[in-house]
Image (cartoon, rainbow, N blue to C red; front, side, top):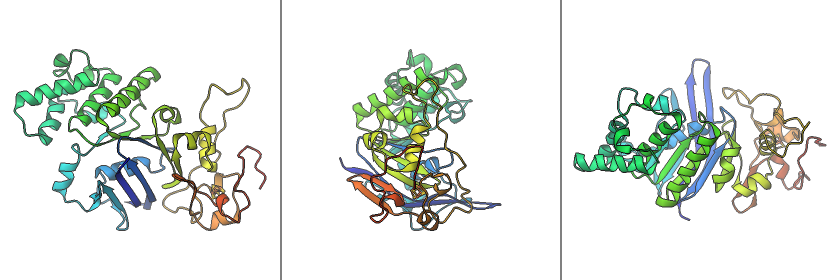
Length: 339
Ligand code: SF4
């Protein structure tokens, strides 16, 4: 599969009264044509800021995208685009589904008008054809009686239907890349499953690349081809879905997976929690940001951020345990860390 997106050394900060918040601190990953790439991590790890940067939605100031960052979309550095080029890019090449559909849709406009607005922004076509395309998009995402639904306002639809409308709007410009930022957070589990199925169907039909941003590992297990695990603005581990779920090698990935509820949990077994708090990104630690919470922490970890070690092709981990001289390359994770 061809690379459609290459994020290289992305660094994004926010300048606040309290100081410079280093939200994203040197993130690099790729997304290939037609795949689903999941970016997972707890709140505040920088995953949504990364997504917004790819969409060109970082307001500068107070945001700042550092000069050494680059984001190549089909080989072109989009961070160097003019505002006119950004407008042509957003919606037509890359679209985004936001987490709260009710807050994202305009409450004063009908669903139909909101889809039509996106279609007419990107395609020059007679109004009647644009309306036909809008109805087709609503039918595609499973809105019943789409012609009538065009006249409805967002508050007249259920949460699941509103999220379907958001997907219809995002797809109406025929984008190659769809970024879904926590698309199922506000929905109950059955509707979550329907929305994820819908996104997979759309991907099969149009070959769209999907970047799925979530903190919910249960959501990514069935749909992701590859996973990027983020913590405190950095990438801790990246690999295929199987490598992350069944062959994870980073203590944070291990802790994150163990903190997720599972049906395999024995009756009296306690759900594991990751003790401590993520670091303050105004003054992030110079070493590994997970050091204060990591049961395997060594002296080197607090001194210097670990380089990225390649374990297998595509499976990379940033952790000093995999330094050739650490002696812990074959470590088996468990609660009783003996280092
Ligand atoms: Fe733990 Fe050190 Fe690895 Fe960080 S680098 S995850 S502190 S072992």
